[in-house]
Length: 271
Image 1 (cartoon, rainbow, N blue to C red):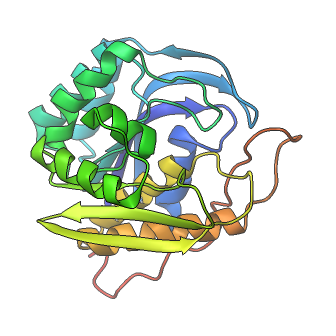
Image 2: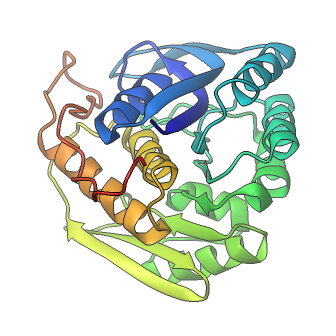
Image 3: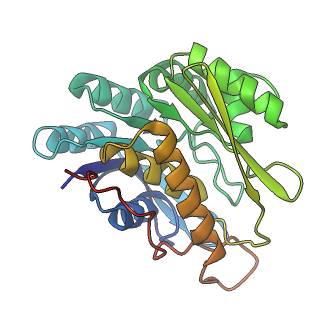
């Protein structure tokens, strides 16, 4: 069985972070392991409080897994502080952990900040060059490349800029685009592919970025080509949003339905 690792924060509401990642790994048929970077007190309405874990404890978690349960693919999400960005970068580099998907989490779906502003530049400098794929939304892409990103054309330019910064590929997510259509732009190896789908009229979007990056990491861990891993994960997230259970008392962003089946695995997956 293949192993996928998530390095991220814990979501007490269960819709994002470590919890969403492990649910997604399970659906994709990989064994999920985790390095917890922070603990949050949150629900569908927002983040009430959060606390980053001490960097040495995060480093020990990486050491424990890399030496006994080394991942076939991994992702990182909420890191919280510059010190943890450095710690995670050091661990990935020290153990040469493969198929790294960087979800540069900076702001929660609710609008609450989940990263110290001083750490944003560190993500660009330390983590982007280690990533097989970076998956920023429009705001995160704008922060990373220091340019406005509001159209598919600007998304493509941002993706190319992220490749120049050292990433092997970039998926700029268009969930915040205006209109009835969502466009996600994948830039890799000089090629560009746009994934287009109709927007679902719902507020159940908590954890979409976490789930997407986890699905991609799972696909890469299973040995799928990058474009196939991205396509499968986008399909999974779209169906999980469409089947959202409507949890929460209203006024916030509910979780996805992580019980929808993952795309079928080719015969050689997981061998």
